[in-house]
Length: 124
Image (cartoon, rainbow, N blue to C red; front, top):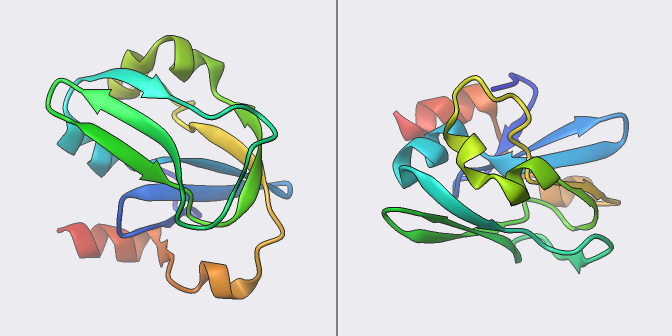
């Protein structure tokens, strides 16, 4: 996981790259889910508020709703993950983001997000 990412207490992460945010779930969440078998991602151009469910992930253990860490508009979905959700289980697969969003979120929306190092401490 990238040390520059911010994480939620519900195990989503967000990583800013050139003004665009990649959003996904943490490795810890993937480990807890077990073998992932299905991912439902939103359509592009869909707008979400912070904390809204934007995706669903199903594993052999359970189905989980995934929440957007900040408000934004989906500009791209990870087609590889949409077509082959089991790639999330592969430790060597690097493109584990689910969606990319554009956002004009203010600092208030970022206030409850954790640095990756703080997140790791929280889950241990």
